[in-house]
Image (tube, rainbow, N blue to C red; front, side):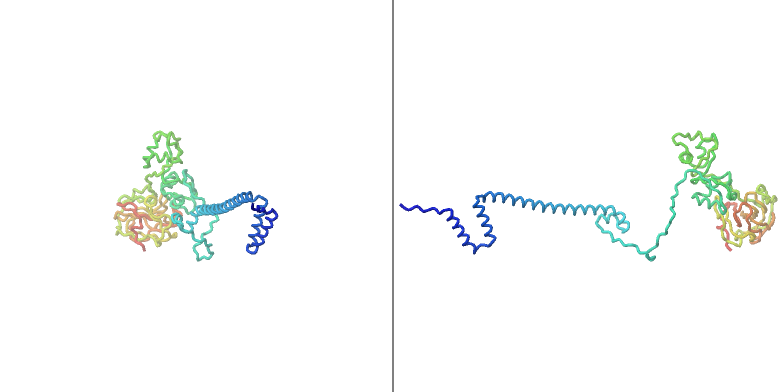
Length: 419
């Protein structure tokens, strides 16, 4: 019977393992030796399997944490960049109108991604452009009026200058002030108080029993224009245009209203009937005269050729005012007969009217002196009087008219021959 092999003891096993470790020292690296020693120690303790199992779990958790942190940082970075881009886009959208206006880039070009030019500080050199004038006073924009206001006539005013000041026609000044001016611009004088209408039209004093329709028809407007004008304070939903129940004496603005103006200028006085001007003043000639006949051409009646005061206006001033100094000679514009020579009662002062025997008459007003008499024949270029400022005049000048039997009072500029 064979002898049973003896099992090595625990001590012998340890010594054998130690010998094996000692034999491999020359071949393993220090790190591997330490790892092997650690694993053998765990094996000796009998906890190798639990350590490997839990270690694997711990390593897995650590790896998961690293991945989560890495992804979080990456996401937050992208969100921040996107937020910054959104904020920048919003700021550019807000600033785009101003920047586009400055740079000259249209909204369409900006939408296509066209960049704005860099801002450049304007140089203070005067060669860079026209600098804006500093205006320390605030200009308040004018607002449309609906009510009538008043104006006191100042030295140097005339009908046209007042009308220009308020943006209305000269006729509107006359139509709004008949009781003061009676359609005669020559009656304008310093200190007068005038009504200034808020719009072109007429000013009508209502009399009890009148209908708004009849008033509108007289002034040539639609009745609704009177009803709807705020300054008349009429209720368009309640007023009866035929029986408006307006208080007697109430003044109504008639927007766009017109009427025929009365001509207070020298009347047409023919040599056949000079007595027609007997109402006009003491210069009227009451007899029929015969005498010189004109040649149909008209020379300039003064030594000066500049306009002072009123120029020609067919409705308001059918004449021209020629400037000069008191005492300057006045010449007959064409040959003819004197049919008026003396004072005028309608604001023209000393006045001369010549009938030229060709269907034409000429008138010379505001004279300081008269050198002719009724019925006298005068010839083109003769001195007939002296320039002045008599009657309703704002300064020395000659009021000169040309009157045709066919065309009425014409614009002298179209007929006079300049010296």
